[in-house]
Image 1 (tube, protein in one colour):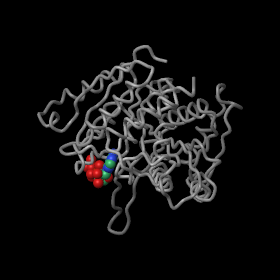
Image 2 (cartoon, helix red, strand yellow; image 1 turned 30 degrees about the horizontal axis):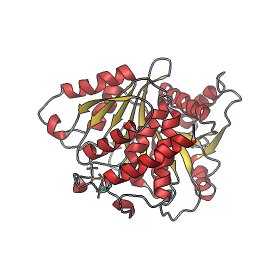
Image 3 (tube, protein in one colour; image 1 turned 90 degrees about the horizontal axis):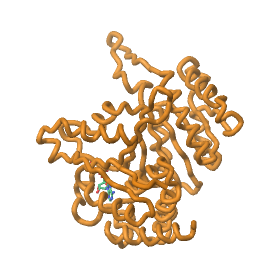
Image 4 (cartoon, helix red, strand yellow; image 1 turned 90 degrees about the vertical axis):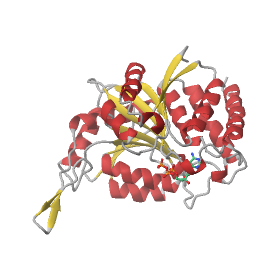
Length: 346
Ligand code: ATP
C-alpha cells in the first residue's frame, strides 16, 4: 500500500466537477493516503489561451507515471488528441465485464480485458484516390508498438492469472497480421511468461462468433487498432453498458515498460445534466479502481469495483440506470459497501 501517493487529475467540463467530488470522497474512505494534484483543463481555462496548461498536465504525469482524466469538451481542440500526442500513447486497455443488475439482451457472462494497439492500422492514413474509380490506404503494423502492447497484455495476464488470446486475420493479411502474431509469440516465449500464461490465436471473425456463443474462455484479448475498435463496442453492447466503461491509455519507455498510464471514463461531459446531482460516477470510479490496481493497491481497487457491483446488484443506482440515487447519495451508498468489502478482506 502506498504511503503517500500523488495522483495527477485533469479536471474537465460538464459533470467533471461532480465526478471529481465522488472520486475524492471514495479515496478518503480508503486506507491509503492519496494526494490529488489538480490541473484544470476545463474549456473555461483552456480558452484563455493557456497553452502551458498542457505542460502542467504532462509534467507531473511523466514524473509519477499516472493520471486520472475527467471528461473534457472538444471545442477548439480535442484535449484527448493533444494529450495522446504529448504523452505518446500507443496502447489502450479497456476492461469490459458483465455488470450485475444491468439489463442486457445477451445472457452470457463477459469478463474481458481488451488490449488494443492504439496507433497505425488503417487509421493513420485517410487514403487517396487512384484515378476516379478506386481508393487506397496504407495499413501500418509497427513492430515496436506491437511489442509494447504484447508486453503489457502479458503483464496483466500474469498479474491477474488470466489466459491471453491474440486475434487478427493472420491467414489473409499474412504480412501485417502475421508480423503482429509473430511478435506476440516472441513475447510469449520470454522467460517471465514462458509456460506461465496460456496463449492462443483466434481469427478475428471466429473470435466474434465465439464471444457471442461462449464468452467465458476469453480473458485478455490482444488486437490491432481497427479490431480493437470494433471489439470494444461489440463487447460494451453485449454487457449493455456503453456509458459505464473505463479505459487506460499507455505510453512506454525504451525497455517496453509502461511510462505513463492515463485512466478515464469512456463517456463524455454530459452537459445536459451538469450541476444537477444526476451524474453517474461509476465509469470514473472504475477508472480510479484501475489506477489503484496499476500502482499495486489491489485491495482498495478490488473493493471499489466489487462495491460498485454490489450497488448495481441491489438497485442502488443513479437515475440513468433507473435507480433512486443522486451522485452524492450514490457515492455514500458505495462508500458503505467499499468499507464492507475492505473489512471482509482483512
Ligand atoms: P460530449 O460532447 O462531451 O461527448 P455528449 O452529451 O455528446 O457530450 P455524453 O456525455 O457521452 O455525450 O452523453 C450522452 C448522453 O448520456 C447524455 O444524455 C448524457 O446526459 C448521458 N450521460 C453521459 N455520461 C453520463 C453519466 N456519467 N451519468 C449520467 N448520464 C450520462
